[in-house]
Image 1 (cartoon, rainbow, N blue to C red):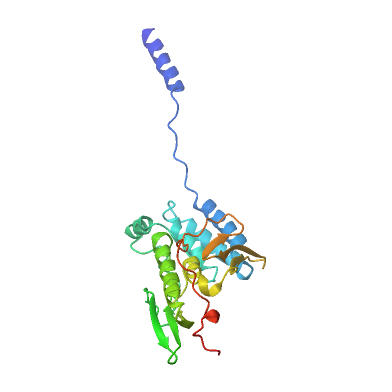
Image 2: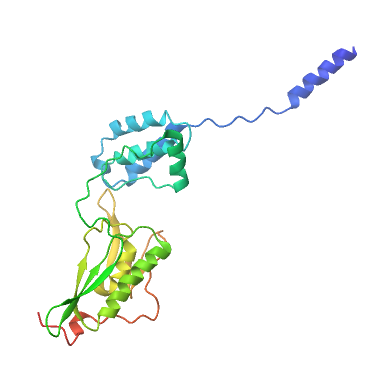
Length: 257
């Protein structure tokens, strides 16, 4: 009798102990579908993409993914399939290294690499040079290389261009802007640094896949001013107290050509 009671108590205890929580099953296809939906809505060339074929490739790759780290290659394949040459996956270095350690290759190793067409593609530093045009006239040559990222590097880039323009203004009748090797990157350090040449009102915006355009920022007094939209304010701004460069048209030494 005692044994039966003990067994009954153990059975009741087993019924009241909660089952161990099961880890959620990873669903790579669901993540792929979310990415595909976003790409179809946002991609500039969305109307030119063979979506059934691309979705089939992405779903097949997602079916092999074990976790979100493996999904990096899936996302890279999706963006490569857009065919715009300007869409890619950006992740912190530790995630890239983790994928490399697991698979022995970069997650975007199969992406197409376009040949470089400029001998100046490796230029990283700004340069400034005076160009004599006659006994009383000179111009300034400015080399504006590519720049990526924000923060202190973007500010230093913008400040360097602006300072060169400000310093050259009293004696320069014009400027030669050397953009060879500049493949782009962060637009705003370039624009704010060159704002004395562009003037107030230079606007930048976007055009979506439907052709609709929106202006979200413009230049004013050497700073990027957000006009509309959720974007954060650009990090590169002209330091207060710098002199405004004199326009070449008001320079008494400027020739009349």
